[in-house]
Each structure stands twice: as structure tokens, then as C-alpha cells.
Length: 104
Image (cartoon, rainbow, N blue to C red):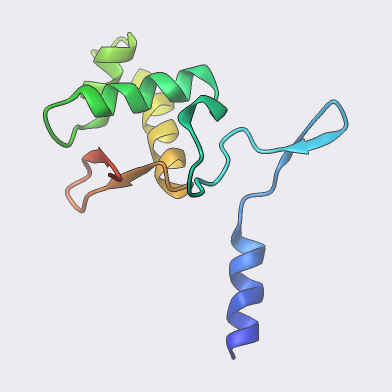
């Protein structure tokens, strides 16, 4: 059973994309000692916005900081999906109430 669980976890991991014939992940899984500068610029801005906040933030607040028109709900989806992607890769943490915070 342990082997089966390990296989399922491995298959659930995001697959890298192709850039110039090489496999790369745009948002790598966070590992010990890995710096944020390995991320794309827009993801670095999102992490900086979460860090600058006084506490956990909603996607709307992050959108305001990074310059998204928050009056249109559809324009909040790209920053929200980036926040969730950062959570999935271990860069941020999502609280049960839907707010985002840094892991540290």
C-alpha cells in the first residue's frame, strides 16, 4: 500500500513544461535554501505583496498591490490562480478562511 501511495503522489506532481527543448517548471517546488529569485518576476511581486501585508491577505488585496483592476471580479482570477499555484508549490500558505500568508 505504501508503494501505491508513493506512485500516486509522484503522478500527481505537476509536470514540467518545455522551453527550448528542456524541461523546466515555471514555479518550482520550494526546497530548503531555495531563494525567491528563482521564480518569475510576477510571482516574486505576489510574494512581496503578501510579505508586506500586516497579516494574512485576500487575493483582492494582493491584486491591488500588483496593479490589477479589482473592481472587475474576472480580473482577480489570474492573481488568485498564481497565489494558489504558489501554495501548491510550498511558497505560500492558504488559511482555511481563504486568506494567504507566507510560510515563515
